[in-house]
Length: 217
Image 1: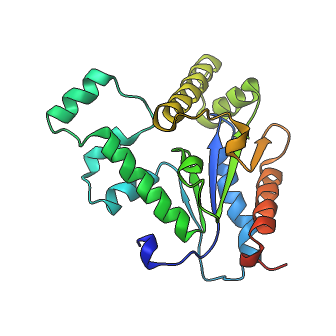
Image 2 (image 1 turned 30 degrees about the vertical axis):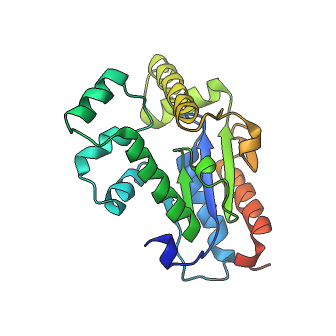
C-alpha cells in the first residue's frame, strides 16, 4: 500500500552490515523481542532483505527479469549502456529511484526491518526510522561465512572481501557517502562481543526507548 494512503503504524529499523556479521538471524530476533511490548498487537512486522527486489518489481509493475539488474553489485559502464540502448532494462538510475521510493513507502508505514540498499540514508529524514550498523572482526566474519555456507576458508575470505567492497562501492556511487561513517547510524554494534539474542535485545530495547509511543512500558 502506498504510504500516502496509510499512516505510520510503528518504527522502521534499517540494518547496514559488514559481510558475515549475522544480520539475517538478528533481524528475526529483533521482532521477537519487540512484538510482545507493542501496543498494537494486530500490526505484524516484515523483514526486507533480498526480497526487497520482489517488492520493488511489484510496486512499479516491472517484469521479473529486471531483478538481476537491481543488485548492489556495480555493472560495467559499457554493459550498462548497451543494455539500456537495447532496451534490455530501463536506465539503472531510474531503477534505483524506484527502489528508493519503495523503501520510503515501507519505512513510512513502519513495523519493518530493511537490510542494506542504503536504506539508512534514504530514510534519514523520517522520524520513525532507527539506523543500525553491524560490524565484527574480519576473522570472526570469515568463520561465520564458513559455518553458514560450508565454504573453505579461502572461499569465505574471497566472499567477505567481495561483499564488503560491493556494498561500500554501492553507497559511495549512489549516495556519495562512506558506509563506515558512524554519524549515519543511531547504533553500531560489534557482533563478536555479544550473542545473537543479546544484540537483538539491545536493538529492540533502544527502539522501544526511542519510540516509546508504540510500546508498553
